[in-house]
Amino acid sequence: MDETAEARNPLRDPRDRRIPRVAGPCVLVMFGVTGDLARKKLMPAVYDLANRGLLPPGFSFVGFARRDWEDEDFAQVTYRAVKEYARTPFRDAVWQQLSEGVRFVSGSFSDDAAFDQLATCVRQLDEDRGTGGNYAFYLSIPPGQFPTVVQQLKRSGLSDSDNGGWRRVVIEKPFGHDLTSARELNATLDGVFPPEAVFRIDHYLGKETVQNILALRFANEMFEPVWNRDHVDHVQITMAEDIGIGGRAGYYDGIGAARDVIQNHLLQLLALIAMEEPVAFDADSLRMEKEKVLSAVRLPADIAAGTARGQYSAGWQGGRQVHGFLEEDGIPADSRTETYAAVQLGVDTRRWAGVPFYLRAGKRLPRRMTEIALIFHRAPHLPFSATDTEELGQNALVIRIQPDEGITVRFGSKVPGTAMEVRDVNMDFAYGESFTESSPEAYERLLLDVLIGDPPLFPRQAEVELGWRILDPVEDFWASHTKPDQYPAGSAGPASADAMMARDGRTWRRL
Ligand code: BG6
Image (cartoon, rainbow, N blue to C red):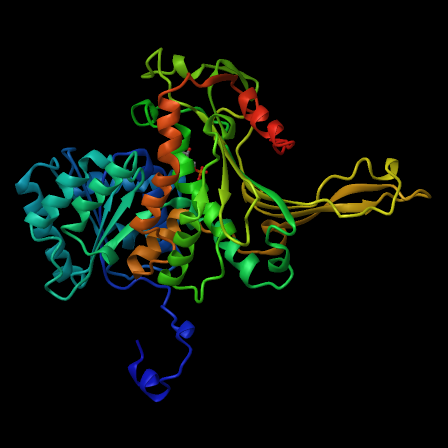
């Protein structure tokens, strides 16, 4: 920080605090480098950051895994991942510079000697490449292995920042599978890293369109006045995927759609839509507002009527026949895990009292689409004939998170002609048409924030716990009741989800 400027002007607006958006000297140590996430998202993100000039020349990338690899082998694996999945064009010079800092340490997580070797490796990098004793540890591994790795980081002295450098640890969801396990997980981290050193990734928060919710709401004048119960009838948050569970049976079975994406991604979206304005765009203010609103979320009194769940059965998708969930490799034939979940939530605040928030997420739905739709009340009075307005629906503001990123406003317009016929039309903002810059991948943004040490986009433990507090009663209810309903792959979900909306006199938006 510029202390002299601060001293000269003690009344300086704290919001002027600007962090340079370029990483300083550091080492990124990654566990779980043989996994899909590392290959498809993390390694390409490292390259894309380097390609955009956001990493320092001495930046170093260390992989840790059981494979019997040399540095060059790991560099090759990284190279192939970059070639296949990077967002930005491949440039030899960038890759050459990056690859000079690539190292690999071979060993299992319980192998003391391997962690000692890792400690030697990063200290050597400090000397050879000027990484300044700054280390980020990325745990792209199953949560069951967190305690072992975290303890090893402690035992080997890697977690101590006594040499003046910083230490950060990055963890990926699932952060437990209920409130109790989330707390246990946190306790293992807490003993080793201070809370500000823990970066929990919810990759939805790294998406441009998700960050834009804050700009839409708080940088404009025209939306906030209608952003409340006086004008909003209900909110629909949808995360539809066309893919099935692929090769993730081991993770997905017993977890299901609600724990996989509602507890984190969809509740984060709800929080950003429903929260009050933070006093500043800094981590504490933002997280505080999200936590406040999440603590006001309420489940329906009748969980059976206010939730729905389903499991995809065999069907057709994209012109191809696909298996049902129970026939997927690694899924037991009697699995009760849901691949579709819908839940109705209330938000007990003055702003939202009485406005239902409907959340739904599912796999093997007709297409991949995540959106948030605010559906407005009908105009209190229509001075037109009923027939002229029979094709007029409710006004809507739709935030298209992905794909086809943008925002749509739906409103009634006069149909050209002699009658006063009114019909719904859309007004669109599309990223592709308004900006020449392409959006960074979520992981690019989040990885950079970790290396910079900028935490607003990372949920803290309180948010994780609030998510489980909301979801645990639903999971308990489902566990003690009937099986999920079936829905054919490629359809819009189980009939029970439509019935849930119909009971409230509403319908889901078409997928
Ligand atoms: C992950 C879930 O968090 O998000 C996956 O574990 C899901 O099941 C994925 O497929 C979807 O991410 P995105 O960015 O493609 O919407």
